[in-house]
Image 1 (spheres, helix red, strand yellow):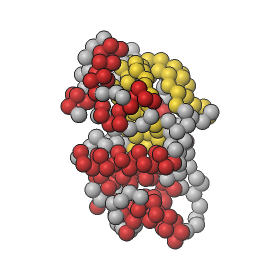
Image 2: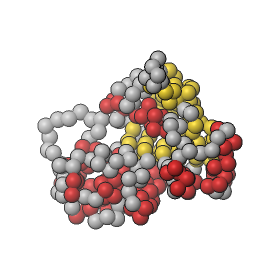
Image 3: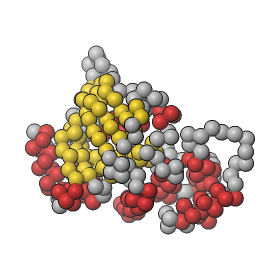
Image 4: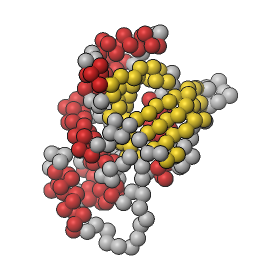
Length: 264
C-alpha cells in the first residue's frame, strides 16, 4: 500500500545549518499494516510523515501509494489518498464551525464542490452513528462549535474526520502527545478500533515506547534518517522497553537521547 523508495531530504543545504533529515530511507507497508514509529531527537520521524503527506518535496527517491507515484504531487492532491491527525488537537478541525460542518468537509475531501444542499438529513444521521462510536456524547451535539470542545474531544473528532473517507494511508503524528494520560489512552484505544474496523494502513509516530509495543502489528525504529530496526509479529508482542533501548544502542552505537521517550 505504501512504498517509500530510497528517499532523502536535506534542509538548509550548503549552509552552516545543513541538516540531513532523511538518508536514503526505504520502507514498505502492506495493506492493513499498522506500523508504530519511534526514534530519538532528530531521527527523521516527522520528516518522514511530512514527506509522505507532501508538506515538502523530497530531494531524491520515490513515494508510491497503492501503486500510484505521488512523489511530485502537491499536498492538496494527496488528500484523496491520505488522512492525517496532528500532534496539536487544534490543527485538524475548524474551531468556528459546527461538528457536523467539520464532518461534512471531511466527507467531501477530494471531491468537486457544487451548489447542492450543505448537509442533508441522511448525512446528519450518518454522522450521529459515526460519533456514537467515539463514546463521548458528541452525537447529540452536531451543531456545537468545535472550539467549545476539549482537546481530547477535538482530537477524537479529528481522528474520525481523517478516517471518514477510509484513506489509503492514515498518518498519526504523535497525536496523543498533547493530551493528559487518561485522555491519551482513550484516543489511542479509539485509534486502534478505527484502524481495525476499516483495515486502514497506518503509520503512527509515538514517543511512548510502551504504546509503540502495545499497538500495531509492526514497529520501526529510526535514527539519523534511516530505519535501524524493524520488528513485527510475535517478536514485537514479546518486546519490553528495555529490549528497545538495547536495540537502539546496538544499532546506533549510542544511548537514546529523547527525554520524552525515556520518561514515558
